[in-house]
Length: 155
Image (cartoon, rainbow, N blue to C red; front, side, top):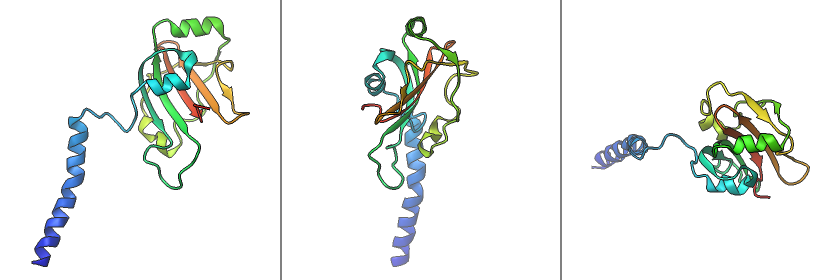
């Protein structure tokens, strides 16, 4: 009798990962990222309304000791004409991100984003990290996509 219980429990546990994977496919989940734009619009008000986003947070699936610091990283699509407005108002240079999503929580973003981006960056729009927050923004002029990395983006 005890052996049958253990076999039943073991079979039930084996079904859980398959059930979870099917649920992810059925729900249309494309990855372990966020798609809502409102938190990004609060973090980066100069970018205006965003039309699409894929981003992650250092507090997603927290591994290890909780940290009071928050990092968000990902991509967002600017509204039509917004990048032209920004490039007219600020100095930009050709410059891409130094790494390809090296933190553990950024792994879902590997392989995402625009194909063959031509990144540009403006120091006017970045926060330099001398205070409690740092923001780095890179823009792809061809797709109106912004790649961002921000430490404590809400101040």
